[in-house]
Image (tube, rainbow, N blue to C red; front, side):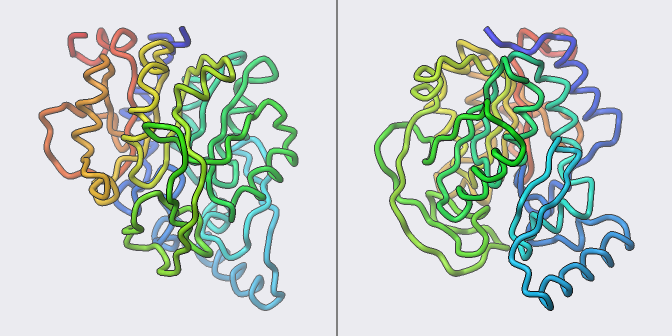
Length: 319
């Protein structure tokens, strides 16, 4: 069983509650996409905003299509599309400071991890560096537009301990319709595209689907952490991974955006209730507040779910 130890869970919660590492929850609602759609707003300093604006003009003038960005926070360098908001946000600094800090407290060498919605591989490379050669990372990414970058960045950073599944995770295996957003694959989804900042050009394709339980069993993984950012399809991933969560008891860092979840007839509250049904506790990544099943407030942000046995003594709740 790969459950994070109580002291590591407590350290993660203290980071959220006391150290002021606060993701921009209201801006766009995704673990890997908080800056998308509001890049200028989410880049904090005027100097950084001027730098990004200057780089954008220079890229356009030189017709640069891709850039290699050093990202020490993610323990690597990454080739990204020059005109992507992801590249601009990473270059501006402080990208996903809260998520990476929390992950570092929970993931230890020799453990396994899962990155669902791997995009260009920032979190996959980061997790690979944390688990080391004796651990493994499963990266899941369905978008043909981004898979080339994912594989390239894994090779660039020597992340040979990362396994890639080219498809979606869902509640059952087979094939699924997938809506690929041209030019901004981070908004792609198996549901209709409703993100307010997503481009309107969408291509419908068919991709393979599997359950988390199937892939974990096939590869013999025992994950200590699972990160999920799949544009509203988080409940499908969780449903297909119930056995893994009950067996391994990992920490789960997930996007929860009621606007996107509505496409699947779900809400953040449904996710919280699901986690409670398998004896996990859920926390708001914005401030570390406990999120309870009876809390009906609309939510756009990220949540951290931890096994109750590791945190019950410290958050005032009974297991």
